Length: 454
Image (cartoon, rainbow, N blue to C red):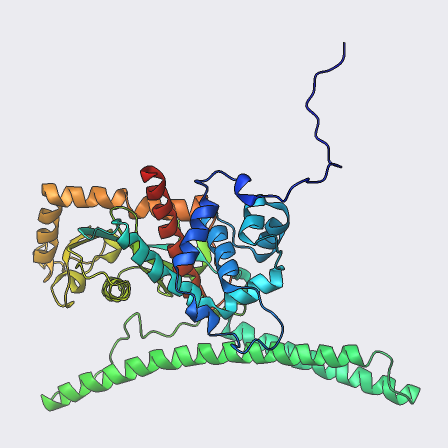
């Protein structure tokens, strides 16, 4: 008795034209992305091209934007992997219309239109608002450390930079001397003249990068010294006005010299950050989102902590909402203890919504008294007021909203969508990429809402 198998015939050609709509279900994410791109304003992309039709043909921005948005939605950001998917994956073949842009084209499009791609974030927020998903009763704020496209091993101190520059100059001199000697002995131009020339150019470029890094460290040291000198002059001028002799002013932490300060040769804008699993070379990426996990503000900073990001993120939130045409004000903002400090909650920040910020357990609470009794800091009333506020039913609900909004959103982004590291270098590039990641997160939430209503 023979086997009863279903076998495919790879030699059988299609007898009729293929309809790509039969390849995927009607509610697939691909069709949603295509529909969304059809509603986006792509004029910012098209302005970068010639309007007279001359020159070599370029890929349609609508096609490239659709491919990138779907790739970021599914956690794919490598240009080489996107190129491979355009050849092998049905979803990408549908998005690209059967075309296959190579990885260089994809990478250049992403870099050339970085700001236009970041602008999709505002358009995604506008689409979410039109679908009724943006409710600003409560906004949660938090930050996460995202790795840069650089290694910790690429950090150098000022002394190491000076030593490396000296080594490069010494190597260049030896190469020049060896080439001159070979030229004199043979009486003709060396056969490998091109390679030494290219090698010297590479050495010169390396020296320039190291010199720029050295200048950045020297400027940082001079800035710290200038702060100390300025404050010392102000203190001693005030003492002189009271008839007191001048005194030596002790430097604050932000004014002390940093002999161990480093700069990264690969991505000079990145900083050494303390993340959950140790030190990384990266950035502090900030998001503000609603209780429904719709991101309303995205910012990247070089600061190692979140304490100074409350006011900038509030301003960014207002700017983003205004750009998206959303006039509803933010009623309440909740954040963790990383944003706690007196200046954030004492009412000095203009147009601040109702704040619910966990009180930090660290920090000084006042100088100890001579009699050994606990001393009360000048800001103790702010601490007690916030603690009492968080103990109320509303305060407890605000903290629960934070746990179910911004925290899972970071988990989804970094774990499910593999956005643990930026693909491009520099603070500006990281900022635009973080906004693109935020845009695709909003579009994914919009897609999920669309699925529940269809």
